[in-house]
Image (tube, rainbow, N blue to C red):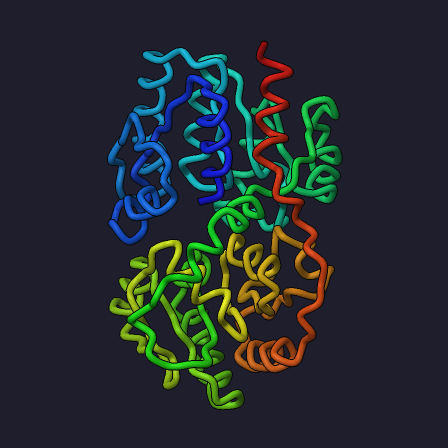
Length: 343
């Protein structure tokens, strides 16, 4: 979703480009339907990597992406975010001396236990073009001795994506949800769902939020979380309606209509901030501090009492904060930088 504005910009300018899909997400609800809804070109290469340990998944991606780069000989490889796909794409390009553009560079949670944080740091330090979404992200890069001339503050492409897709999402009817009002929950990160004690604590917090607010929680559950719930024998609490993962437009509809979002996703923190939906982050830290600074988001951790206290406080929050993430022209700025430096 976040790379789609760049793809659309490249298409409009008739650049010679192609998309590589590693297959890190491979179910229809989390993969092909996004491409269809966003009306972007089908990937030229689909590596079909699937799931596995970090080493297995990243290793298969490295092998696949390297073959693509050797065959296509691109001038630049663009990656966005902090996934294993981003790490593999950047490392493959770096080893073959192909320039790398990292979109969403400079985000830091300063928690090296998170695999996403390790991916961010490594990718930033092998990249040639670091497209920082905010001035704070730029400062993080400069503190790590990244050369100033490599860093470009562009805003976040998620603002572009929301502006391009929000109107279409409002036409969606989410049949899996038959009640209103609602809160929205997304919990899927490894540090939360791969730890039974943390997941139980989070679910207890969700139960307390429903008990104190009286508002039901909609939870499109990630396959990883569902698998762990079965393994641990954990049931979602009363007042939490678990549904299947949603397509992008349906999720956007639920998110924009929610009274509150509870999440451990960085992207959802950003979306909620832009949509002016109060957010409670169920983690100990965030790499999106700007959302906290403007009052759109609060860090609750996984303590049940902290989750419910934070939720009740945010439900009373005025939705009048400014958007700190960009002006909706990030894709144009990114492509303009590449035009200037690759000609």
